[in-house]
Image (cartoon, rainbow, N blue to C red):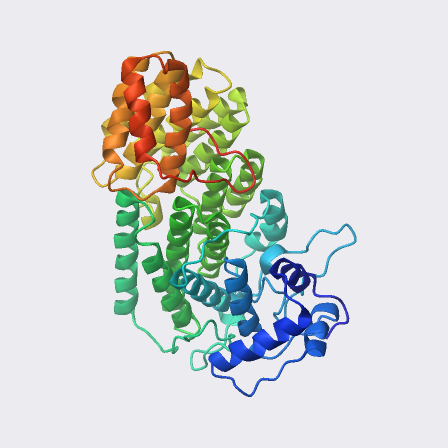
Length: 499
């Protein structure tokens, strides 16, 4: 007990709407259901947790996380509740801002536990049919402030973790605890292959159909990480965790679970750093920046890109740096900063062509090829066209280049290219050609579960409004309405970026 109120727990307690007596009874009931019938909590104890910062013993933090997760309809972790003994309890500074949101950066030995706990709660949430609403995205500037110094340092795995013979003493997470045991290189190779399978599926079909499978696999890996493997295997396992966490985040973003997606991106950055892969940590944070641009928060995206670029380290390959610059350019385009966007895209092109390919790119960068470079340029110029209509012509050129270069199996990216091209053509007052590419996008969307494609399709639908008197466009508008879900997606924290 530190005598200070636990403001994190208090804030969530207020959102839940329980009385302290109700929460005490629920804790006892839930604990019994989780195999701890001896637990006896009362109102005075709940008051000490909230008002005095007392941290209860296990299993109470897990019980509370499960209760708040179900009540609020989103994943709530022990960190979110401020109930980690060696971490902060959410004490506020004098200015009222929360220090280190979500416990970031957490101690190295906590990464595996946080990963396992969060994925377990996510799976429980899905089993019960709840949705990831009701949580707010953490601002990019806050993440930057919390993680900047931490990301610059190199982790010392051997110093931070127990010996090989001893499992980590991590808090059990969720209802099912993975039994930690040593694994060999063959098992890790199989896990690495599974990442490639999931990645290819996501690129082709979107994140909706495989998200829970990825989260489940990540949960298993978190359990494996709670056992101290030999250093060379442990680093590879952290790499698998980082790749799966990025996929889980990207798939969550793809289906509109925005706060959940952001947490996975942050977990991925932690995992990559634990594995000594700073470029991967930077790429994970760049995903969070792309998410922010999509949600209409380009200023937060630029804050995150500063962190991603500075935290990636000098060993980052030119192609990876080029990819980071394209995301920064998209954010600048969203803000109408055409000159800055063109300068940034020029840097991206220079970096891309400077990569001689003598160093094989990591598996997570193999998706960013010349087609993706043109696709991101098309998206940036099309976004800028909302501020500078003349930019639509350049957007068309890059979108066509991307479509010509797209490899098979990249259907979702192809759909985005079609939508970017059609949208640019509408802005350029060429409804005939726009209609053609819009219909190609619609034909390709049948087997795709990406909510992001629907978001961009809605923005293209908005552009068709000025041509509502054209017979072909009237038909197109009807087809778009049929292709979209009944309930339009809602952004979290701002207007969505344009298609």
